[in-house]
Length: 69
Image 1 (cartoon, one colour):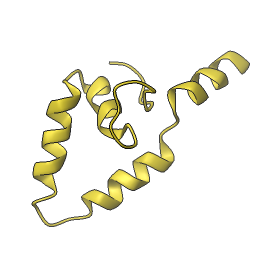
Image 2: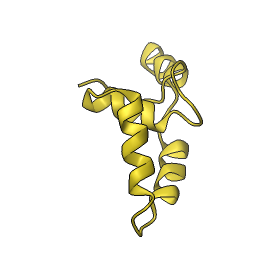
Image 3: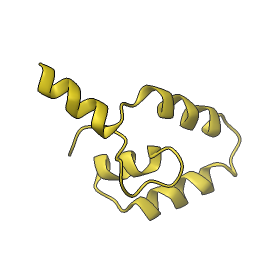
């Protein structure tokens, strides 16, 4: 499993589904379908997506931090 960072390539909106797909070893399309189906259920899925979009570092920012350390 890789680290949880939003990729710069292969993302649609914020890269959250692509990051989760990469982390868990599934395709990004599968993760997007799972997210869309979960939006049919009651709950804060959109708020969770926005929170992850804000909290997850981008691939470039994470690489910059690793190089600085």
